[in-house]
Length: 408
Figure 1 (cartoon, rainbow, N blue to C red):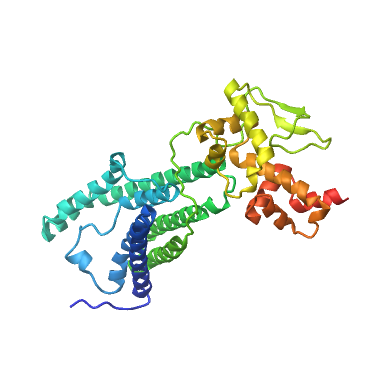
Figure 2: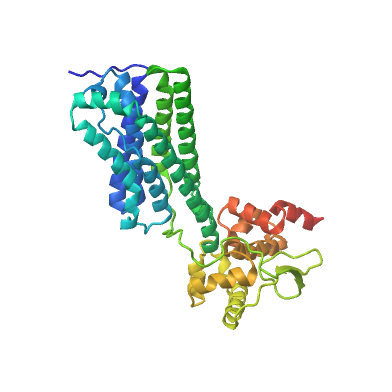
């Protein structure tokens, strides 16, 4: 009868293993109830993390069945784990994401790995031992598996970073308030995974260089426990955005950053403000747009008139789709009107109106009883962080500095 030995080495790993499975089940239940694929995938990510430490958990606990009866049997999610992390993040920023046939290739490395191990394992214990001494070790197949795993980790890390960067750029073209949908958890998740991966590589290097024994490799697995606790608690508590996000990495035909338009230059104009701040002499500094089609000019004029008269920027949740709907058009038309016609993305375009409104309200003696943040909220901002960041970016100074400069 196998008895688990609770000790300084095995107990922390056991707690982490149980933690991972408990939260995986909670995520699967919630994901099924709320029809949220991202919860289901995060549950599998936690299972993968738990399997990454269970060999050492059992070993430190005195249970050696994995090395005796189950040698060569697949013990972890292996090559599938980094792909699961990537698809979890992908489903977070796109509520409509569903797996398709073209996604099946991501499972190919894992299937090859599992098929190889199961094929050898099915031949029996004696064959496994003979295979290890005549093929596995002499031809360094174990090392090859390790390097392939590192390569896959790096590949999916790059894909995830690219996804995050594109998502951050995309929300600026679609939403006027991005603080609640910035997914800092996305960034923190990647940082935690990367830190753990680097520590694992470092420990592997140390182990090979100094020939560490089984017990001395414990610290690597303890880091895995810390990762399980962090991802399970913070991942489960991650606040979901109030609106349904549908980001894809497919080209959307619009520019996602502030653009320096070909052939444009800074010019002075006495026209009503488009989207930029005033210079010291009272004139507006705007980027001269490139030549627009007659239809786009019509839409640009209609847009600017609507922004001035109806003040939709006072809605803190205003999105590109919302504004397009109010103008009785669609986002694919309105987006290039904003990008090419004003030289700004949607986020900066709307926030410029809010900043200008704040400046007017802050200088109005009737509002002297209000705090700067209170005025900002009245002008369409809905978070202090977004307000300060937008004001600094679009005005070159903080709100407090602006007010003090006007009072001199």
